[in-house]
Image (tube, rainbow, N blue to C red; front, top):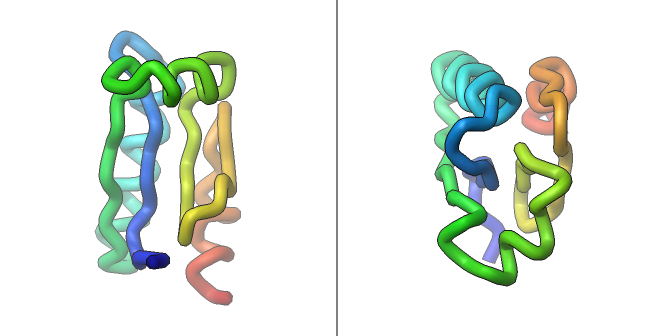
Length: 80
């Protein structure tokens, strides 16, 4: 089931992840769309899948961004 929330796959001590959280907080303030953060170290499969890509943002069960997060692209997804 596709939900209207962003999923942020991240890890601790990750400056890009911290930046992604700030951007998602801004998107949440502007749009009301929440996000859920999942630490990739909580699951071996996630660690294997995303280790070199984090932060990873998922929207409606699809990976929409990874690495450096672009707020305009996230806002564009909400317009669709």
